[in-house]
Image (cartoon, rainbow, N blue to C red; front, side):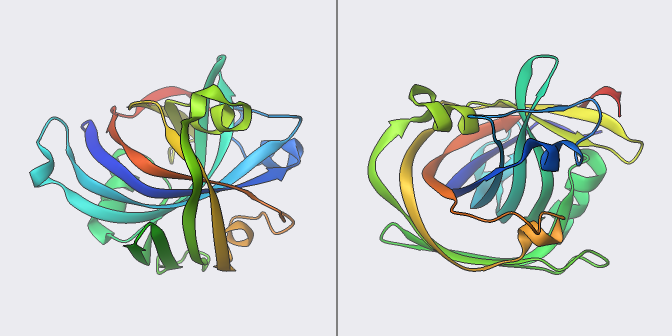
Length: 232
């Protein structure tokens, strides 16, 4: 049985694309509704690193570091906003196996590096998961301007103020995990993306920019056990 997890999310880039809601809707479990802002659905690519990942409530000294790359969209279930993950690439084989078995998340094993120097982050990921579609991502990004709370503004509030994540297990049941953390503090960001095949690998070949970028230094998180919500 899965246990609650504690971790820190650090050096996050949110690379956000406007897309046709119908494009996203047909890829979601039937129990979920696509959520929109200004008439658009949104896809977000999120490179970052996890720090101090451990069972809750163990202290951080027992945790591990886990670089990660996510592809996510924004949904509603029973009136509650949440996030749905199409893929999560991570550089930790045992962690990927555990997340798939116990948290029902679509993790893929990948070789990932993240280097932060004077506020500038260099990130590179290449999927190594047996049998999975190849996917690669390489970017350099950094924050711009002053930090602000995402809950205070329109699009950042839509993208960040979500405390539930949804996934589908092998029996096609919708599952929910509640995540608890302080409100997001974010900044505008600039990024140079040299390689990005993540969207096409997940069937979003027609998506193009320009993306909207945000950066966050991160938050500390406690994620609940995954629980079943409905059959999809």
